[in-house]
Length: 286
Image 1 (cartoon, rainbow, N blue to C red):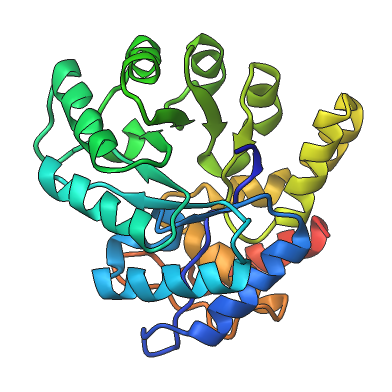
Image 2: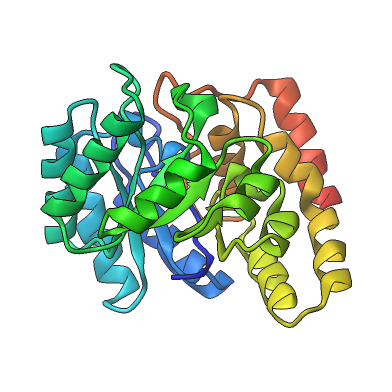
């Protein structure tokens, strides 16, 4: 797997229930915008606010629309190792092509405990596992040396999504594992130049990210930087903790892709002043 894998925002009705019609519209939109695959149930998907039944409904819907060939990476994992393995097995059975798994963060463990956790999940599945290295969210540090060891010693651990600032040198330091970038693509180009083979931003600027990826693959750094700096104000705005998902949904609603910008609590909603700022940036970056 490589390329631009947007984290699919979950679309809701204004009353907070799933909006499957908008979800289907968004998946089709992302395919036409050049996505190389999709990430489901991540932080930008509000995966933490979805029931297991809702996850199953969404995974089946996305697989039906995307078809059999588009890679789908489903976020699984759990605070308990056994449950993490079971949920990962279910996601595989329902059509996920790979798993993105956060480390346990409620009851933190040491390096050997992390090896045990990911090995247990690996033994439960036969598809690739992406370790989500996101200490700003989990407060769990996974050094580059440990990620490299996981890639070397755990059969299905093949990828790592590096979101541990500074991300650029860490991506350059990992071995035996394929690195993807996150943090809404804030250091997309530098990460690519250090060896990253993919980026997992939000769902609202995928046409631009796909064009940047194509420019990088063609060796045209100048074109990549021109396109990147054009959307940088929006990338920066969406990195505000707790407000990024709301911003992405407002942008997608303004584009006519989804019906509602509703987010589920405790996800934050942008206030009226913030919406005016977002409207300005959306026009400025167009």
